[in-house]
Length: 530
Image 1 (cartoon, rainbow, N blue to C red):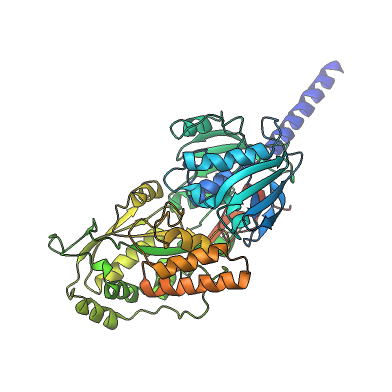
Image 2: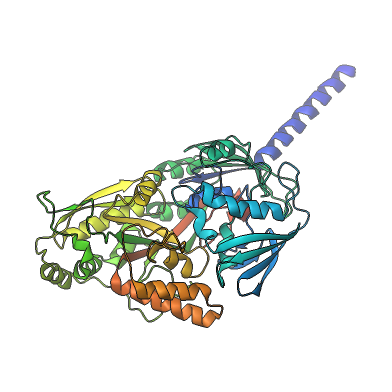
């Protein structure tokens, strides 16, 4: 009897062990992403995939909802109390991952450290209007701005809050190491940092002391799989639960797989080409390689010819396989400040060739065209197709597809003559984009940080600056619409297509609520109902 009883106990223990291990496995979420963070310091870069990953660990003062609506986060409310002062009330009883209290001191510290540690794609754009931070009490801060700043709550969706204790004393030289090892990676987000292997995997675990909704996943693995085919293969093999940016060429096949589901959405990311307006451009020459007497991109006729050579509907249909939409400005139609009067952009090769001839380049010229190949869906295909389209008007293009980690630092160093990347208007209003990429580069005004190729237009600058301080929403949007019209006429940047995105997932494991900013957050992924 005792022996039989012992066997029954062992059998029961084995069953319980299997059940517990199965439950633990069910609480692990594995996401196959195309790119991950470039550091664990959230203030290092403004790159979208960097911020996406670190939203799990570090909370922001305000939050961008699934349609970019501004929502409370670490700030529960905010109001302008005079022309240059915003008051933010902070959420009480919020704990950092080390058990310390979140207070106004952490907000002040986080804002003030950003200019000191920002890296290649500067996060200073999110705090550029801040002149001073005053602590009123542990849960109240006054943000003093350099004049009226109606969009400050929008900017703060990317104001990541770090612990002033954990990150104290760090400099630009040693901050990344302190965060990457986990020493300073102390946030208030729903997940705690466990480990990070660059270009490989970010491991997170649930923070049970999180102030908000308890997360269903005990552990989250974000696996970097930049190769589209590899992501799809791992999904089909059950090695990941969900993949981001499922390639358009595979969407139809994935939808037919009984074990999988696919979710799609049109995003706020726009592929745009940046044209060098400087007197000397580093990657342009005559077709025989000899230098040209001047930079042809300074000629408005050449810029228009390039614009007219691009067939946007064909790019959407062929290069993006239907997962996208043609655009006629740097922001999408749902963004405040979008200009509804601008016409759709249509190709016209005959006119483009005539403009090239009038500008003195009947046989074209040679140029290197650089673009990302691992950041957004279709970037390589769209870039390669544009190179072929420009050949039709005599421009000999060296198509230079690069990983984002190589492309963006080189772009910041102004090494390109023509480049293309994606930009998303993440705050939901056009000033975010216009003030960053087409306002003249003016460090004193903290404007034009991403305009590194010499474009200047005084009328455009004034409209952008006026919009930045206009508290009347209708007037502000009118200024922005007029600014978008000037960009369309001057063509320092050419809007190409808006990016559509697709997620594919294990049907019996997960569901997702897609976001228009394309962020793939464990917080938006739920266990599938059985």
